[in-house]
Image 1 (cartoon, helix red, strand yellow):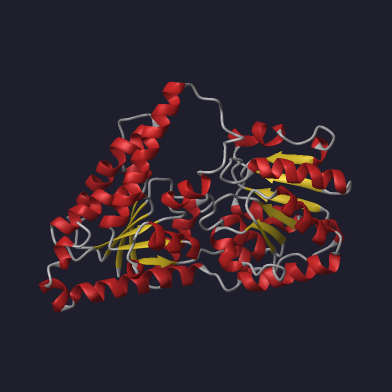
Image 2: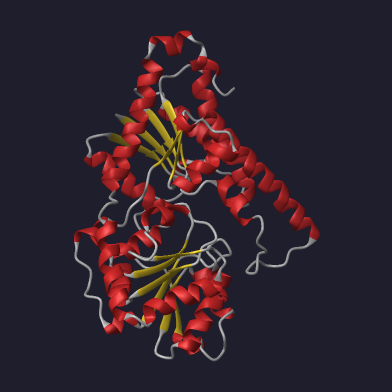
Length: 397
């Protein structure tokens, strides 16, 4: 099968969504499929403002890039990892192409907006009226693009059953054309045994991710402060984007801040070393699609305390290989974390079970899921009754 993968980002194994795209491409190639790519540097850009670029320019630039590539021998699948590919889907339908357009979401935009609607941005900067109006207009445009991608895609891939069910139940998506396909940890993390779970690891708490309201940064402030006050031998390490580092430390109690360490993003190999030095991992996100960090932590034998959202609900059995807590429930996070802090044997058991569970998720399974989904859709498209029905040209138009 020939794939054309479009991703508005860098080609890198070390990033969040970029790492997901990179690992999936490698897994598809290992399965014997042909993968060609369009990355950020291949997409023309004239608008410097990011949100305006996404809202007004990027869909057209993606269409132009795909049109230039489809002058080559035809691809079986155009796999686009953002909602900005809807013009590609519309164009493929108009030309009655046999090429599938699969919209791959790493956390569906409409689900994110719904999950965050009731929470105030405790971490956000104050904005004047003009900026608030502009942000609202851009948000409406993003929602429109997400719905157009859902409309014109032959299939939509999401990383959790929560996202899948929301799109079916709340957006009226056809259940047959929405597929939950899980992500995985870094292959190197899965292929080598984690370090033994020790008393030293047990005293070290880890957070890996951007520091935003989506990720529950303010919940981490409250939870972390309470835990560090309660257990004076605990430490907390935060691995986050350099732009978030001053903000990350701002909300912890001044009496515990000396036990909070904040550091930059690092390579996958360096990050594995950080995981192996820690025993507990907190992920207090209000929304997650896949949560790359939880797959990584499980694969390195950490004891996870996570929000019950996204793929974390699909992969963690509460009380067995981790704890699941309601999003925004700081007291719940303190209670769950306290249970494992005070019971070393329980933490060690969860560590072992988390590692075992992580082996059920590998990138070759992700790639296989995409291929199987595409094959089903292509087979249906090839059926004579499908072409004769006229659905090929007009479905969801």
